[in-house]
Length: 254
Image 1 (tube, rainbow, N blue to C red):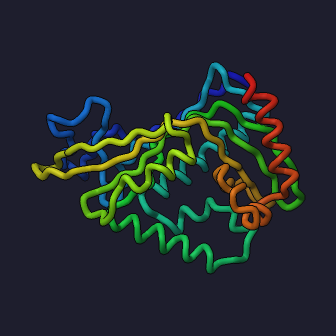
Image 2 (image 1 turned 45 degrees about the vertical axis):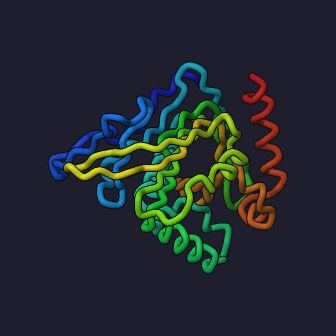
């Protein structure tokens, strides 16, 4: 299937709604390749997140309706994370596969702490280029997406710590060439704020899990394989390996 016309676009990166007349602009000496960063805790409606599909080269083994449902839920998953709505965001984590609610509570607490202390994990966009077939696991079905990921770590002025400390972690996860570090000033309503930022542009993937009794999709990053115990709770190892083999055969080698 190569003709799927599908796109989710957030607000323009400097857009101002009628309810929010404040103006957010870059300082005059900001680098040419940066974009002003809205505080999505205060202005969630300004999230510039976009989910797009490669309408020319898409390699998909899903039905069109099924893929649209996946992408709608993927947008919600990233958007809710971007704006710090953790309870809603965790509805897109495969909680139907684990009873460890204490672990989920710790994760929410940690993310909320960093979010309100100036560190934001922000998905800028995903460009979907591959979708595997669904594999049946009895109580759920699992698929794998191949995508180009546009991702940011934004450090606001109230962040206490050295942003450079995240460089090696990001390079290990996405590759050295995929990570760029930027610093710039932006101005909102006449007040200047200094932003530190890692921008990531990388090829990545995402596991999609859907309970059999629901059309609702949940998501796991490829790094789940580095946590074997948790990965084993989420899906069978045979499923993970079969999906990876399918992606390598039908997409990675293209």
